[in-house]
Length: 624
Image (cartoon, rainbow, N blue to C red; front, side, top):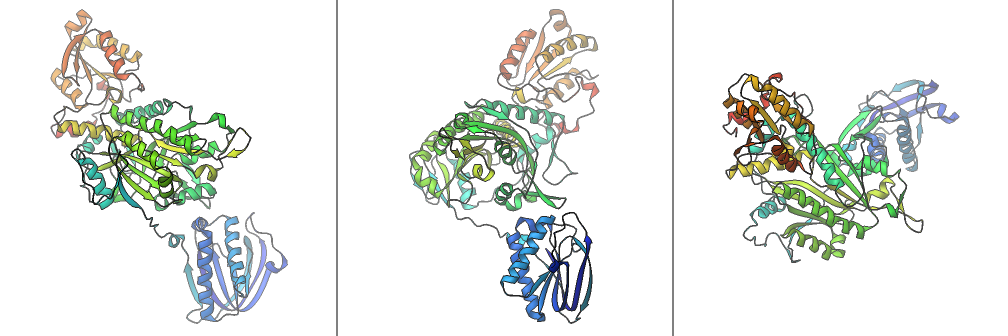
């Protein structure tokens, strides 16, 4: 809110005609006024004021009273004035805030008057001209947002159900990674910077910052696009494999803070929200898929017979991370979150479903050869009433977890579990998560009807079974980096490889056979290309190695004459002559359970420009 405060010897106004359709209706006592020795408060209500109107009213009244007492006026005139700011609140909110300022001053026994909102008015003003007769004030809602300090306590909880103070816990052999996690989370041990090999790998395959956007926004070259789409499609396969019905939806990423449930939910994330003012309204870019999924669910007619059920969306999500904390592929301001929300009848059903969710999370990590550490964030009341349940979950982890205890009713969840890997540079990295939400169903108006016809808000499980799409890929590349450090050549899973089969004809006369073979692969949804360039065989094979292509098929006279393939298998390092059907069988086994995503490039390499983003690893001497 912006105010221009004029101590006037004389002030008169008279309404002429409506300035906007939403002008407030006026009575005779508002239509005009004439005053002597008054403080005229020309007031612009701004869009930001809608976030916390109670605070704005209280602070505005403080400022007005302070100036009023100093100039010793006989009265106060609240005068709407839209010309002090380009960012205006909606008419309805502006009237509400101005009226509340007027009423608050009146309740404090001040002689207060107000001019009508939304009208053209003529006015006459005679300013006294003393040093305090012309003052401006700015009330900002940012003043109302002191950083919340939440008291939380840290413990280490073992599978045996024993609780330890982290400062006295004796780490056992094999718990080195867990100690790294505890040191960082509990004791604030600084982590090393940089991205190691992961950053090189990401750039190599075309995961890059977009310099023409806001910081923290990525772009995806063709190889990166295929990998992003593959993981996105796979995240749906994972979600729909749970033993419950799951519904996939799509929606918008922008929601209005005038929607009260959105406003309440957004307040939990504070400065981490992207805010966009449009047409005298404030919108936020969603933090995850919650808003869209909850908006849809509130319109569904749900019975207890329908639960549990899941709703899923790959949501482009936005978090206003600090610039110094941005990490390519991991900590972003815009990313893709495969969000699954599971509606359950009550907390007991949610607790049962969590076992299934937790097992699926670990199953997906182990497919990549990884295991998770865990942080269990729980509220004090949930810990006291569900201690045995929490211990049983930790038993399934098979190792200690970091237990963080929060006061009750601070957030909408009662338990929130984060699954962590320790990356190649020995830094904890959160990947997957789940939480039990007991607050948002009622907030957003989501209900189901029980067998007696009584409405109840469901308990909602939030989960990202594989983490965000980008973080899942970060884990894939981190696994490759750690394997490479142990002497294992970097290799992508076949389903994630941008090109799964590269066909290399030795001579131009072998091209027809290469096209024939390529068409067979394409029938089965396999990403295949042909290196038809005028280059040596050795260079073509090396270039295929730079792209980590899992299967390289070399076609020469012998292969054409015998209808066979000379296949180099990257993972095993084996070179073998085989029939087409034999290689197809190997590929089918590799791809079983995974999505088939088409290539993002022309079939032949001669039709492509030099893909500069495939150079960095080669230049660093690690092309194979």
